[in-house]
Length: 267
Image (cartoon, rainbow, N blue to C red; front, side, top):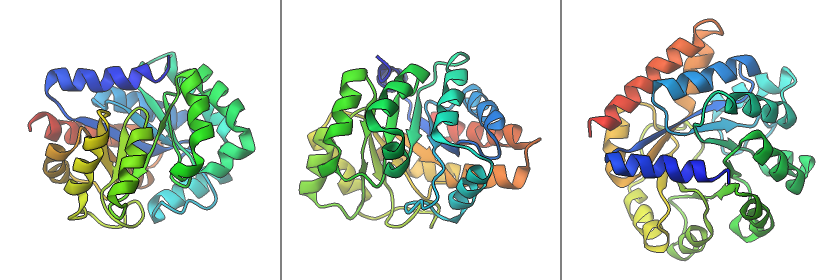
């Protein structure tokens, strides 16, 4: 089933004694064709999984960099159906696990059952939905379980131990631990509570733990890697895309991913 790619990616990392790198890009920014080249380039540069952001008009968890990218993609006519076509095209060229990060409104508009079916057919491995509380996620998680699509939850540094335990027990694929309180790219650092949050997660699930939000530099991934199985880098990559322009975006992002992956391999 589709989510098996996530499992095997983390197993390969564990067997090699490595920590994973999960870069994020906004799907359709600057356009869908460039997004495909970005995904393939990041895979070539050593990314272990790729997170594709689904553009949305009110991305509450995202900072200004990803918000601007989302607005630009929407203005260009990018939608969930087009992103699934993009994934299907990418899937014919690489086996790297692909995870969609979407707010719930696009999922609801598409239809949860229809989306899960279409996502699996296209080759999506998992969904991250930051505004879907664990108490309301059972229906979508069950649909995903039936088709092999992982519903990957987020855990915040402000979450209580009881809530962390509930989220961890219901997680699929991996657990996304948010490194700081706030939105993506809001600062470069991490909460002092992060290590304790990760310990609580690990007490309730054997799934891998990935850490994201506010991570931009090789030195940061080196500091956080001992606590996590993978690091997620988003705003820093999207920002480089915006400054590079279409012609140089792929080469610039490949260099960023190479540098971050080297930092992880050397740990």
